[in-house]
Amino acid sequence: DARVTQTPRHKVTEMGQEVTMRCQPILGHNTVFWYRQTMMQGLELLAYFRNRAPLDDSGMPKDRFSAEMPDATLATLKIQPSEPRDSAVYFCASAEDSTGNTIYFGEGSWLTVV
Amino acid sequence: SQKIEQNSEALNIQEGKTATLTCNYTNYSPAYLQWYRQDPGRGPVFLLLIRENEKEKRKERLKVTFDTTLKQSLFHITASQPADSATYLCALDRSLRFSGGYNKLIFGAGTRLAVHP
Image 1: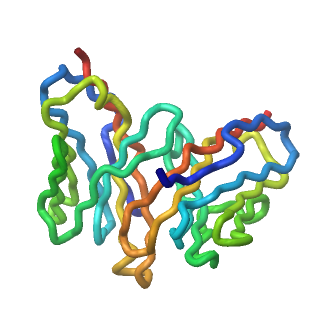
Image 2: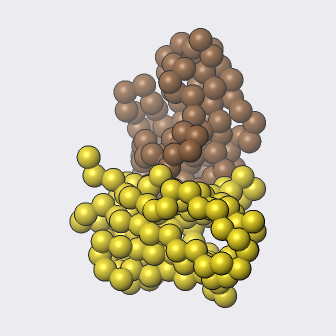
């Protein structure tokens, strides 16, 4: 049963620390998304990649967030330095192509910054 | 500015009844609209996609309508069951028209549905 895998599932860290979240998209999917979900803002698109190239990261705070795809099986989202307002659930999702197909979400990385 | 609105209040219905959830949008011309289900502590799961040239889509007990004039989608669950209790999110994509064919789903905040036995 193909699925998007995210690690860590839960992370508690102190303000100022670096946080790296990892995602393994479904094999064969060439589009990868990072979303953030909070009670106040709902699901927000942070960044996405097609064929490993970043297409849009306009939703991401550039000063502290960075997203990369070192290879087709790994996407990373890094926050440095982390702040309490970054506390949220971060979802990675992947899609087979970029023309309206189903997006498959991972189970999320629950981040708490204290 | 672009806006997607879903009922923020939870919808409580009795088992066996039809649940109807609403998704309204403004300042969008979506090429298609999707509905997702999200359970607590889990990621959203895709349910249905409807394109701008389709009026209605069905899948088992689910039905989605899409009215581009009213800028509204309705999501129906017939013969609802307690297992249908979850948050339902609508998502729009306009990028096929404006952005060269890539996917940029924008989600509504979701409506929580509670089906009582």
